[in-house]
Length: 414
View 1 (cartoon, one colour):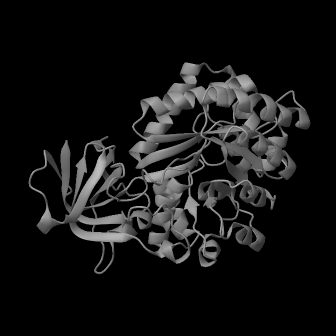
View 2 (view 1 turned 120 degrees about the horizontal axis):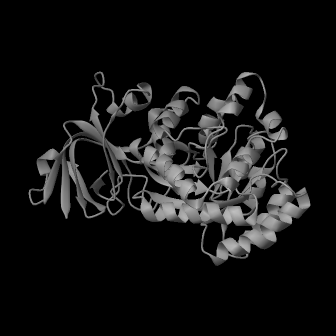
View 3 (view 1 turned 90 degrees about the vertical axis):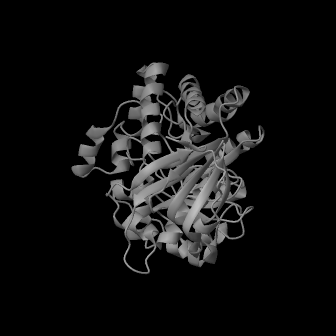
């Protein structure tokens, strides 16, 4: 089935085949084609070009009506498998309690773990699937989902099985991450729980083929560098590549231990020094910043510009979770990248598409307009930029104005 999108005002996010991420000065670049068409064949991007060269043998045509066409957002860090909400803690934050204080009182991650333990598999799936569908409606086409609200073997496996089921029931591209080391589960002491994660949970996760990656919350009050090293070594025995939570609450050493273990990404980075930037130079690890957490918790925003000026790339992700970032709106993440982190619109676009796809290991499949990649696309409503301005700028600028005409996943309108 060949479907042609015609009368496109601009195609943005064009990237040559073989480019899997952008770094340094490359973050300032994206291919843009004006007055264009794009051809999809089955679930793939087959070709694109200027309107004067549009093919006439497509099976169907979609009129873009002068809208902008861009790759779907890719969200490389989410916790969308959970039950209920934590609005009580939202009020606690308003009344002045910190994230750490709420956690010490038994709230936070442990609160979500208690609720998840009581929920049925079906209830957990239905609530989580609703969030995934919400993300798709807002333009996200690839999602990494973590466990970490189980905190015992049975409930961690329960979460991962639900993620597997989501993967089978959504047109979005989904990757799964085992995050048993998200907090110390109730009833365990610290060393006992680290041993449980490394010696019992990981082998069972691998036996059921439930996770693509292994993650650890390496931060103050949670897991140490030594804990992280032990857990990652256990995962490496089974071929599990790391993705690390690091430097959200303190300069934790999580970036350095992630680099040591060739982590695909190190995520959060609200508290970062020049030492972390230097540690990431020349590595295959993607620094990933989560401005939704900074916004919701009142934390510093990541030093995105400093990373880019040092020759590194960055990804941006939503951190969608009930306690510190209850939103999966990647358009808002892109806007915060521009408004609060001072990224250009092109830098922000690369951070929420190609580089975020790289941070979940799928940039060979999605994240850009590239012939052969999945046709995961956002077609916007007609946008009216001022003279000499790209319509792309309007997406983060008018960050609450509805802008999506169609979401296309695997070549099909959603």
